[in-house]
Length: 480
Image (cartoon, rainbow, N blue to C red; front, side, top):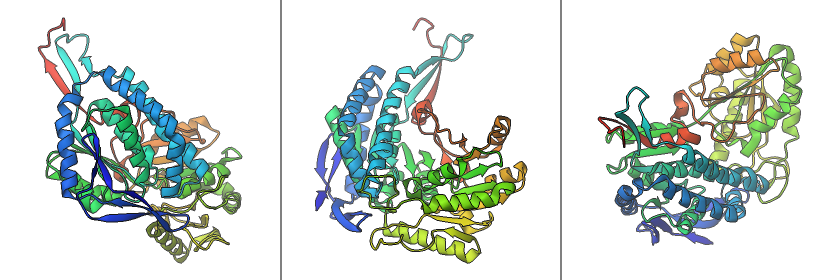
């Protein structure tokens, strides 16, 4: 069994000072394949102290110095991208082709895009042409605790770490204890790239342990967290006493509005998009709102698409979905499927239990419920599995009302060939992101939500700005 009992602190690998251990499980087989150390207070304090000691020097480096290190990191990541994909597949169950493509590829893409963004970013700006003695300076916020999830592990690590490094911050990364192995590989890349000691630190641990220690630590200036809304609320409370900045990327319950004039492949795309990553994406379009005139045909098409969705081992190549990440997640999704049946939703595909022929692993049947109303728990709860709820609507106003009737506000989707209607609806949807007709967001577009989906934005210049303070300076010599 692989052992990962060391943490990366102050530029070196150090044995954990805690005796606590946790097994890392392959969700396709339910077998433990690695064991990690769970950090304690001494480990957390050492990492924070290292980041504090490194901050003054790192924050004063030039943009060119930071770019050189990030470009070296990009080269190293490119060489090890295949290994990264294999690790992600094993630790969280993404099918190997998906893991090497979308999952590992996201890390490479984010590093590359932040390099481009940093080259264009101005940290020292004139207030305006009429105020030659007023400058606006963008300065690193300080020591940052970055807490990342298991569902898109390296995607979230790079979105946070690279933006923070570009801004001049120093870092303590706590990856998910469920899928920590990819972050350890990333720490090896940071080490090989030659970042100064203390700039990047990694401590494994759980939320109640290292997570709470970091969010309440008086020497941590900012927390950036991706995960559940429940955990985000606890983090906000933990950080409140020290009034540190808190960036939250939380849950979602995206509405996907299918109008009668949607393109022919809208339903098939919608089901595939919902079930991608086994439904374990915060921006998944899990509520399918369908105009009533095409509702019956849409239900049939969605059921057919779900029944055609293959489920198989993460280690196998091919176009299929894998397992959920853990027994806890499997049990949650099974309970919510049973809840949907009990609420009176019409089950048209899938249902409780594992897919036929599968006896082990955290595999779930691709499931579709029809005749759902927005008051049902399955329409309000973030299920985080391959479960789709279909809700009918009569007109544009009702569709918008249903879509916005949620505590979440991360991503909504609109499907129509009427461009004016698409634009009109997109403006009224209360979410941080809207995708029209399946068009993906471009590299560098901001990722984040409204309401209980969080605050702040990740990606592009918005991602870097989240790790910066704004300083106004008057009386600046105009010739400087």
